[in-house]
Image (cartoon, rainbow, N blue to C red; front, side, top):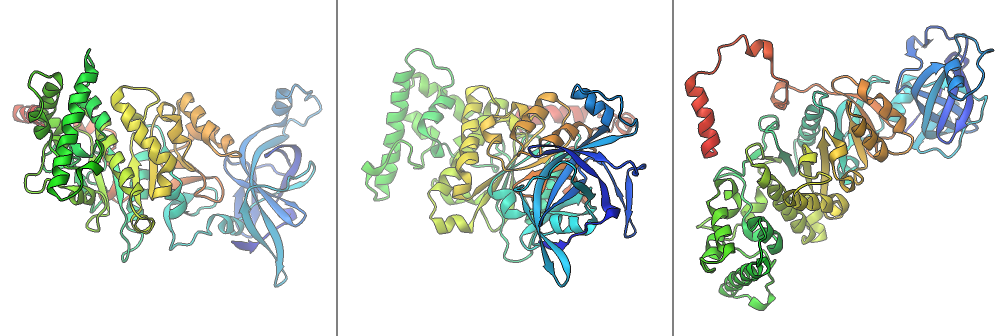
Length: 545
């Protein structure tokens, strides 16, 4: 992107006094009193967090953002230097460099072509200038609207913030923020704008893992899949790897577990070979992990009632909470097409997996089965097919199913999420990791995110985790995370030319997630629930209805 470059004494704010890698210390000119500059009818603030400065270096212009302002006397004291002769009103800016532009001449005007990264570093005593709106437009506003979506406004420039779709999704993104920061609204903004990007010839495939039921009504046109309902999510047991299915069904491993595994494996393989033979296929080509249809009821009948594994299978079949994997469709035992069409279909742009009623011990296996299915399906597609139906997985509250440590139920989910994070982009699966506790997420997963939308974080451990994964030159912004307002975020990484403080767009009512705080004053001023309403709550609880 090119734009005229403005280097003028009117825009000068100070001089470089220290260079340390990508970090600069700038001393403000004494003439600047109210920390503003008036230029061409516009007032520009000086020293605001995230504001952008520029330094001319030969035929290049180097850009940096302000991360801190302090009195020069305090700065010198931190260094252990004498500050006696320093003017009491002298101030310094701490700045981090992020990119530069090459200056060219066009029609008698200086033009600049911006690129990220810094090859030339300024020297002490060089002049520092404020960056004006026209230049910020060239840096921030260069994304092709046909290939990008709007998500908010750049606070420092007051111009729309757009992010390129391929960069946002192709290398994974993290959306992080404490409760009440606007994290869920940001997710809804991104997902709905992806869906509504084009009206024709646009078939997005988005899968949202929703642990709290926040998005059931905020993504118009989405297919809602509830694992606890008979007509809800379908992930038949025959899609599972045999070993992990056995570990889940036979959760306790008493003595003789190897013998139980042998009986489980032997009879499952027998069922799969029978199906293949009935279809005219060679049974010898079938392995224990081939996705061949069978039902758990069938498997149980082939095992002696005296065996412990038979009892474990029967318990799983009777558990209504697990009917998404244990109930077979009598009219179509081979459900492969119907199963995939829950997530990849021209009939709906998104699928919301409602995990709010799923018990904690089943949540991990649900996520594992779903993500393993999508990953294995995409791996086995042709290269051309992968290009035609890429899938985006949104992992809301990711710390629940990809924790750093946990039970064996979360271990399977963690491994499937990690597989997509590490290899998914090669097979056409993008991922958005969403969490309020990034310090509790498996580090392998976060390290694969190349773009970051980070909202207010108050926990020091979470801030430290974010700082460790943030790109170089952006880590200074993390210090401001506790002070961000609602809907404000730091946008950084691959999906943006430069790190920026943004405000996420407001949502229309029909796209607002159900994540608002409960209104106590309104609730306590209303009529409390009657006995019938209390009973209805217990009925839903008792019967998973």
